[in-house]
Image (cartoon, helix red, strand yellow):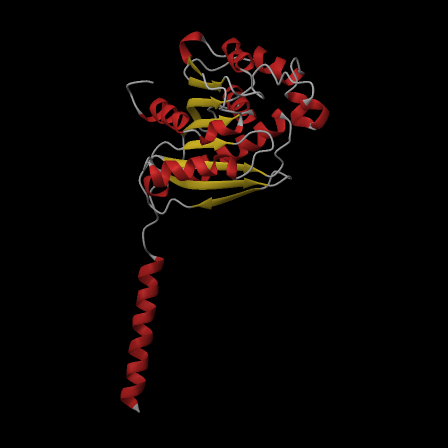
Length: 270
């Protein structure tokens, strides 16, 4: 009986010792929490998890360019939920932001994005990011850089706008169907677009704008209106000559994949 009791005490002691070791493990360093300079992907008007989901799957599993480290979901009330999927994988890491209210105004969407980026800075110690936005997401990316870049928020290194109509959507029929806050901001001559063009864009941020001749939502002329916002030396512009490459197909195109990789992660340019 005594030996059995001693064995039980010894086992309990070992378990306690093991718990003490676990509890006293050193905290992760900043670099262990999140490696590299993340690239944040922002969907456009009426966008969903699929808007960049398939692209990020290609980047990670087909090309081996990095891993999807974080997914952020923002509720209609602006509440943030973050999902850390990094698991110590190699940099660069990708961050996908999904807005539940995907028809909000430029101002509201940009504020929610800024809250996410501030959360990334405070929780994951991320001081700088690249931004990739499709359609209205490209507009929001530029607006974030103009309104929030630096200070309490991560600094923007590079921006890529894919099929982003900086002069608005020219189709009148489009607005017969879409009449919410985001749609009103996307009208040519809207106050939101005027304020964007009157703002001051940071002089140290490089920007790539990608459009397509087959895009009937963001026509090349509207995509090229970004020239009125970005200083000449900071902007690279590509209009793909492909009448079959439509608006949503831009983020599913392998040629666009290569442009993104070249601009963000290669030093030899496009």
